Length: 238
Image (tube, rainbow, N blue to C red):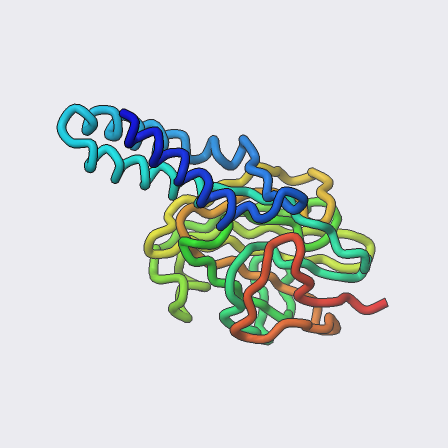
């Protein structure tokens, strides 16, 4: 028992340093995000307790999985950029592609698309790229191809959102992947969201796309790592 408690203490200390940063810049876990992992937590906890009767090493393995799951469902507060024309990343991850493409679900127009790939180590909360009203939300059935494959954008299961304000309409698409097969939405059509506000998440790695007006200035490049709600990926015209 002492070894288990010591391992827990060391594990949480590591999480604090690796994921939450210094005291004055601590990332805050939101209960809503953690709640999405409730069944995972419950199963791992039962396995950890049950395996302790067999082997402490096996119990420590499940405790390590619990700590990783807590880290996965972390949900940091992020500072909002001062520039009112800024468009922020809708998710954490790596910019996988930047293209000019037709957005057919809502805009029905040519747009600039920024694709962001979320690995299993990224924060998986999705955030509003601009302040505005949710004018559209639609689920599309599909496959669960690897989100890094080009055809995933058209063929994978997805949820499309449209954020409208007097300056622009920005579309965000959440896509499932080979591992991530659950898209969660916390907002609904008609809700007014501020820039950076959470509206959903994709569990266990996937892809998020942001569709911008053609006159938007892109401020990121392929390979950049961005943080949802904080990294400025584009700027709208004045």
